[in-house]
Length: 103
Image 1 (cartoon, rainbow, N blue to C red):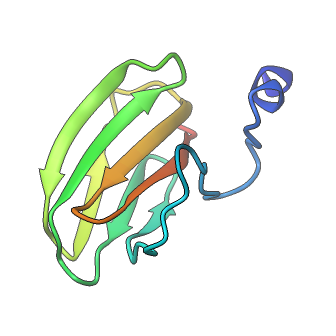
Image 2 (cartoon, rainbow, N blue to C red; image 1 turned 120 degrees about the vertical axis):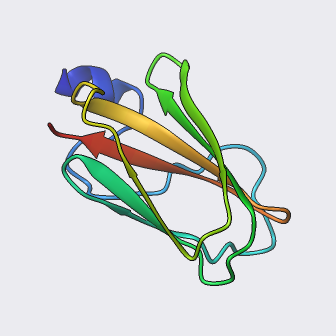
């Protein structure tokens, strides 16, 4: 499985690296991503509206949410252990994070 991840440019051992996709944004997002074994948190210091998509490695959207909390926690114990992409969009920026769910 590691070879499969490396071939796609993903490092399964990096805790929370940003997956730079799309056109580079001139405006820096202040949203921060923290992953845990079975969940992740988004820190949104400005409490701006965020559109969040959780996508599996095959590109299927697992969850689509809209939040404006300063601290947003997502946990889903029914998801299998795998690599997921977390797309976060605000009115000015878009960022994609890699979430390695381990159990």
